[in-house]
Image 1: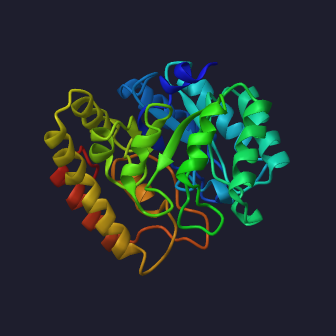
Image 2 (image 1 turned 135 degrees about the vertical axis):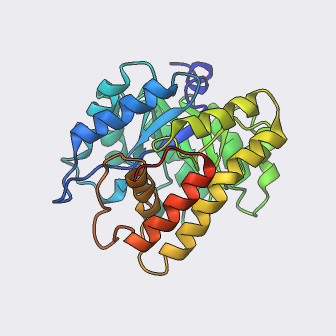
Length: 310
């Protein structure tokens, strides 16, 4: 698939969905199928959002090599070709990443979210070569996850410009340049879909961006589909107000809960619970939200106008 076709799929709200677990912390494939089907039924579709499996929020780094293929296959089957399904590859060497990428391609993923191989402490040439070799091994899209806060994860703007020659790189998950300059995205936004990773989806769109990742797409798809609709209509002030009316409360809950327990999925799994959707608790050492925290979160969600349960 050519870059322009891939850009039509890696666009809009990119939902990093929670991994459902049963009481023994084993992957619940039935709950995964129901979650993805519910998202598609709510309007997540090709060109209007994407479903991302095994991201950090989805506890991807905690998943065993024997677990994620069945999870990805379940999501692809549930989406039924109506919505793009992506897969996250984290911190692997080139050969391991190629192996995982080919398996994900065979299972029906249309694209990958890929971090630089940070534990190899790569040079800029290493980063370029890594994505070049990965692209040449597959026929699906790549969204480069720019992890500037991790040693070895920073990619210079000039390196992104060189990546214009790497056919399958279709998107960049962006929070700013190596120097902290967010506006550097304008140097390559005409080449790649820039996907905001700084809770600033509207600001990104105003600079030419084409999507964002801090979403509640798996919890209540209607929220982010409406934000995206407003952004596409260039009703930026309305989109910004709607987005922050929810996301700011979620951020505040994370700040509170993270004093007791860590883990990127904790509050989102709490949201799923109060909406009546099963995802179970996060895997240890992270802990689920307690009753007091859930009560506060339920009150906030009711204030957003969401149909909470209980």
